[in-house]
Image 1 (tube, each protein chain N blue to C red):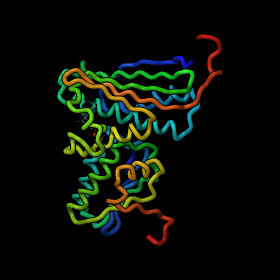
Image 2 (tube, each protein chain N blue to C red):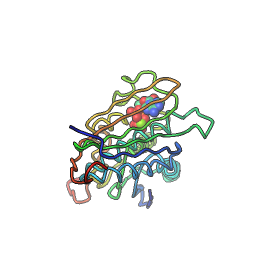
Image 3 (tube, helix red, strand yellow):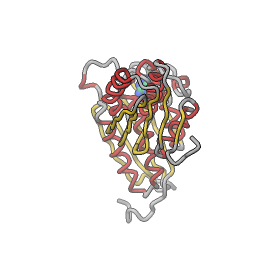
Image 4 (tube, each protein chain N blue to C red):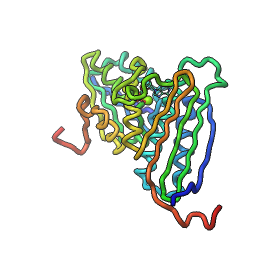
Length: 156
Length: 108
Ligand SMILES: Nc1ncnc2c1ncn2[C@@H]1O[C@H](COP(=O)(O)OP(=O)(O)OP(=O)(O)O)[C@@H](O)[C@H]1O
Ligand SMILES: [Mg+2]
């Protein structure tokens, strides 16, 4: 039976300087499963999409800088399934199904092309989005890497 | 991300290197658009061989510059894109809008 083997959580300021930082911490954590260079690049890209969406969409009308927070959680289980979630307490998405369609964007003016969700979908095995208007959005992605039974001895 | 620029007659070369994400694009977009406005090149050549990371913001940047070149009736070429960058361009169908060239490809 699969069991959570390791996890981390972090909160970071929703500022574009943290885009690269967020990719690095999540991919460094995933590296414990010995992924291939391609798998690491997939994870970095998917995380970058989710985090950038928080910064450019979720908090676009937020004036209180203290409220601009991104919540990241990552874990992997004994089957080698790696999961990462990126959450915000921003404006929310009124129609998730529509938002996830390729090329759908509400921000073409800023040269967005509406490819973020499609990229997250194609670079991970599973993508799940929950959102409520005025409450926030949570994007959860998982990807099978490699089971690492020997990584930790016993039950710690 | 680092930007290297050089001019040759009616061509403007841009070499982008490092990570091209939303943060990088924010600083570079205006710089590049000012160069396009000033030089009004016939051809913009964007060398993406040294890109180590590119996401949808990078894609938006490339397509945005293509639009700028179309506006001034010029054209654009992408030179030697790194593997992941090329994958990203193809995923968005951008390879159908902008010509991708390899410097070892003498037929091009
Ligand atoms: N965290 C979020 N909070 C609020 N709205 C969001 C969030 N994430 C996505 N959206 C909405 O969903 C749309 C589609 O997102 P997606 O990432 O696919 O494309 P984009 O961000 O518009 O463009 P690109 O990712 O190509 O730069 C966005 O335009 C936005 O309206
Ligand atoms: Mg996006």
